[in-house]
Every structure is written in C-alpha cells, then in structure tokens.
Length: 389
Image 1 (cartoon, rainbow, N blue to C red):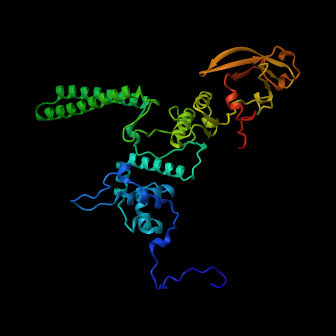
Image 2 (image 1 turned 30 degrees about the vertical axis):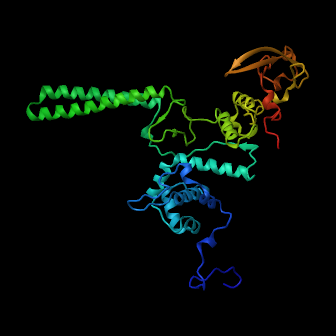
C-alpha cells in the first residue's frame, strides 16, 4: 500500500472514545432546531403525556425531517435507514431510530407547523442579515404526490366512469328480470338479492360521481384529488396533455408571496420564459415588483432566414416602427388578443420593397405591439434575453 493514501485500521482502538458532538460542525444548520419554540409553532405532543408509553420528542423528528430535506431524502423509509447508519443523523437524533411510520405520521400531522418553522427560519436569516431578499428567482418543479390515480378526477374521467356505471346498472336490471323469468325458489331469491345489492352500490357510486362533477365546475384547473387536494395529474413523458398545469399564471402569486415573506416594499424577480405573460408582468409592476422574464420566440421567421420583430426599430416619440429597408410602419389599429390590447403597425410600401422576400410571405408585414410592452422591453434587449445584472 506504500505510495497511496491509507485509511484507519479497522482493528485500531482509541484511548478516548470519540463523541458524536465531534462529528458535526458547530455551524450545522440543524442546530437551529434546538432553539425553536415548538409549542408556539403548533407542533403536536411537544409536552410529554403523564400516562402511556413515552414517544419521540417533536424536535427529534423535526431534525430528521430537515436533514432529509437538505440532503434530498424525502422517503420516510430512507430516513429510518439513515438514522441507523449515518453519523450526522445519529448526532441529530441522539442515536434514536424512529420507525418510518412514526416519521410519516409526524409529517402528516404537523404540516402547518412545519411550514411555520420554515417561515421562522426565513425570518431568522433576514434578521441576522444572511438574506438580503432584494432579488428572488422562481422556477417550477414536479413532486411525487401522495394520491392514487384512481382518486384523481377530471371531467373526462368522470364522464367515462358515469357511462360505465350506467351500463352496469342496465346490465343488473336485465339480469334481475331474466332471473325473475327463468329461476324459481331459493336460487332466484339469492340472485335477485345479490343483483339488487350491486345495483344499489352502482347507484351510490353514480351519485358520488355527480357530486364530484359539480365540485369540478368550481375547481380552478378542472381537477380534484381526494387524498391530496394539491396533487395534480401531469404528463411525465413526451406527449401532450390538455390538463397539465403550467407556470404562465404563477408569476404574480409567487412574486407576491415572496415579497410578503421577505417584508419588502420592492422586489426583483427572475424567471424563465415559461413564466412569460404580459398580464402577469403588468400585475407585478403594479405591486412594485420588477420582473425579468425572457420572451419566448414563437416565430419561425428567423429559422427561415427572414426578419423578425427585433429587426424593426421602434421610435417611442413618433410611435412608429422603422423596417430594415428604412420604410416607416405607422400605427393603424388596436385589437384585443388573448386579453391584451395589441397595437398594429404596417407600411403601404411593402409590395414594391426589394427586401420583401426576406421580410414576409404576405402582401404586407404587420408588427404587433402590446400597450405595456415598455415594461419588459426596458428589462430585456431586443432578442428577449435578460440583460446581465
């Protein structure tokens, strides 16, 4: 082994046993948990009961939960294994190994308290100056939900289920009538009773589907999950799904929540092009939030070698566009498109323009401009890419 880095001999003994305290640094994040007022935060069973078998203190389970969150270990079974083999987890729990069911129950019963703990931690970081909070970045993500697909309902799924139940009810009625004609005695009575029971169960299920359909009419995204209300069916493969959620309407809610949590009068928020929405950017501006969001390129002109909107220079003083050929595109009309007031510009010189083939395949080249386009134009250059800050 000469010439290599050598580890400790497994059979070597030490004069003084090492302490668990020595294995965790003094600035470890989870040490903050010891200073939290668990009762004020709303944790259940923060005080020991006088009778019954002693349970785990909420601080022990909270430490383990935070450790799993920081190290990407969301599973309660994996946290149970880590508590028995990971030195850091051993220090956090005092070498206690809670059962995975205990960990899962703690997370389920103390959801609001855990959220308040996270808010308390953000407030602590803000007070000691670790968190400036003048700029926030947001992005979307998918999390595995605690909800079976059979307990998630959409309009299409409820309609399919109702159609299936109607066929079942009709079949039970036909079988009952056939048994009434062809069978006699106890066999007939037993079959009629069995079919009647199944018929009533199907009718109850139909009533439940009708109630869910009424609730679905008020659901914002036309989905209902019975086990986990926040769970949503989403496409995880490369295919289109009409009921998959998107980020486009989430910029203002996320920015507003961040502004409230950080207690700031102004805020700068960064997001990718999936969050781009003129209405959302305007709403952020009205709340004192500066949004930097790149505009997605939905035009195929650049791919085909033609001029794009960025090649047309806008003159705000004259309210005109000037094309690459030097012609003026004047304001002509205002139309509402997808809830936005769009101003349209074009020039009558297009038919005789020598650059027409590089500009448009139509008779005229029209440019549309949102009435509040200056809000995102001042944050992004002409090609829609955010300026470095």
